[in-house]
Image (cartoon, rainbow, N blue to C red; front, side, top):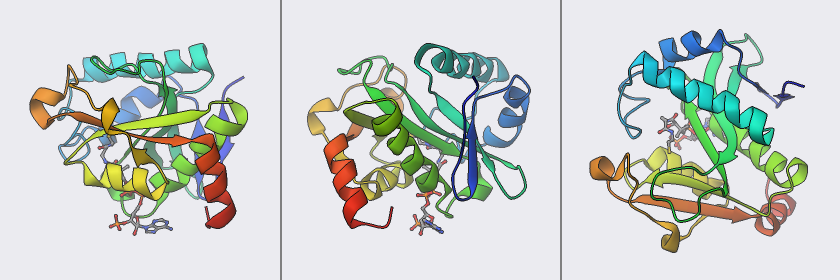
Length: 189
Ligand SMILES: CC(C)(COP(=O)(O)OP(=O)(O)OC[C@H]1O[C@@H](n2cnc3c(N)ncnc32)[C@H](O)[C@@H]1OP(=O)(O)O)[C@@H](O)C(=O)NCCC(=O)NCCS
């Protein structure tokens, strides 16, 4: 059955074929793609889109499409996959990731979707830890990791075959189930 989850302001759902063009039309900007290789050819996004659908089939989760509940507007993606980057020392580890269209930045949407994703990772999928990957200069991304209670694991940094020549080492922030549950008891997640 297709995945669909509602949070306070968002719908997180599995991808449909028509999402491929719609997503590319609003997401392939220099600002959105600044730390992930720059704007990409449609053919490259199509391949990424197919991989995202494949993760749903293989694992039951993916970086899901995000829509705003109020008006159905496509906001980006957030969710869970398994780490599969060239050069990473911990291939296969559950990984959280996010990408929002520019007009959706600065409103807490990524955080809202990320908290739902971590709840799912630990409660529904039974993972014991989740990682997130970014580069030093992508402060919006690693600041979100820190706000979620993820902590950097310097020993997991690696030379990413696709991105490190452009941006330097890929760095990883990790949260374990116990820390997530403790945070849930003490903060207003
Ligand atoms: C990384 C990315 C998803 C972060 O988006 P974001 O909107 O900054 O993240 P959040 O959802 O956590 O929102 C936090 C911001 O919203 C503000 N905010 C406003 N209303 C809020 C609310 N109700 N709840 C929480 N934060 C709120 C916060 O103050 C914060 O702003 P600040 O960073 O200026 O202090 C976004 O920058 C992006 O899509 N980047 C391009 C793609 C990319 O690089 N992806 C990651 C690859 S590793």
